[in-house]
Length: 259
Image (cartoon, rainbow, N blue to C red; front, side, top):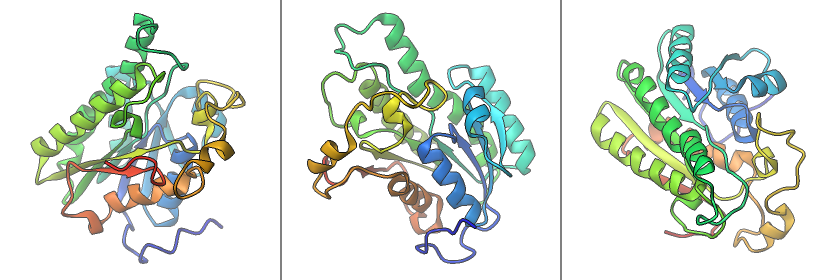
């Protein structure tokens, strides 16, 4: 039987109703497993292809296309009805295009990446916040990227999209305080299918964007991140331990970027 990490006190999360959007990627599956083991009630939304390949036993999943406002609204409504309300939402929706300079990025690719990362975050926030306002202690966590704060070459529209997400998060934090806390995590590279084309958008067997071993040698902490390295800070932002935090970004990168 899966056991939660021993960091968390028994009963701390029991009964918390959590929606995880884009929850069937490598980080998402680890987050779902931890949430369930900690006694949370979880609903996941993701692309139909992801649900078909990675649907989790005992977890309710609803199909959702993050680039469609109508699809997001429908999925969030279904999730809230299934759980009888929402106490928290973690947004993991996002993906990268092929490595390319901005000047060579086609307008269609720019639009697609913006819709899949920034627009989707807006749609999800707009749909979920009315439900969160009904909870006595609600939390919304967006998963951005270190590339949204630390400019690097050849990442195309992804860096600007994730930078926009961080500002979106801060505006939402101000507008929804004190009722709902809104924060973000910004990981560096994580050893998941995201590096190999993405869950639901590829066969997940492609050549990784970075070699995990090579990448790990330039990280001060000596390795590439694993999903649990990102999941634990997310759980912190969902917990009472972060009750006095909103509008903040936790950078999770082993020391490669220090804002």
